[in-house]
Image (cartoon, rainbow, N blue to C red):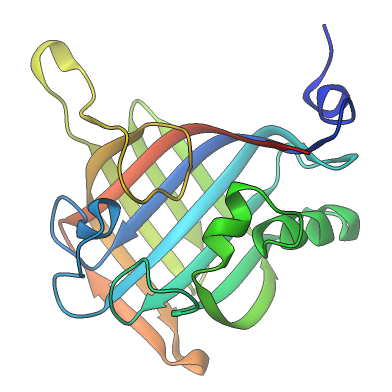
Length: 215
C-alpha cells in the first residue's frame, strides 16, 4: 500500500494532511464563526492546533508534526485579511518540514489552505516550541509551556454519539466534519505580543480531518 507521502508525490497532488484539530475561543457555544455570524463579544480570541498523523506537502513528509496558530479576530471571521496570528511549529520539526507547513498554511501553495490564509492580515511571529497535542477518550488537551493550555471535550447525544457539525459556512478543516465541544480550560499567555486571555467552559471544536489539494 502506498504511503501518504507516495500518494502526494503523484499526479499533481500538492498537499495531503491528515490528523486531529483542537480549537477553542472566547465565544459561547456553539461558535458563531462557524456559521458566519459575528463573535459574541465583538472580537474573538482563539487558537487552532493541528496535529498531523500522516501527510506530505509536495515531497516533504510532515507526519508527527504540529502547527498551532494563536489568533485575534477583530470582527466577523470571514472578513479578509483581518486576523492577527502568532504561529508555533513544534521543535521536533526539521527545517524542511517547517518551511513546507508555513508555505502551505500561508496560502503559497493554493487550495483550501489558501482560502483560510486570505483571512490572515498579520503574522506577528513564527516560533518553535515543544507542543503537546493529544485526544484520548474524546478529551483533547493542548499545551505549549508558558504560552497555551487547554482541555476540551465534545458534546454527546443519544447512544454516546459525538455531536457533529457538518456543511458549515466556515471551517478550519475544510471538507471534514467537526465535533462541537466545550473547553473547561483555555489560557493564552503571550504578553510580548499583547495576547493574554483565560476562559472556562467556552466554545471548543475538535476534528479528525483530511485536507487535500491537487493541481
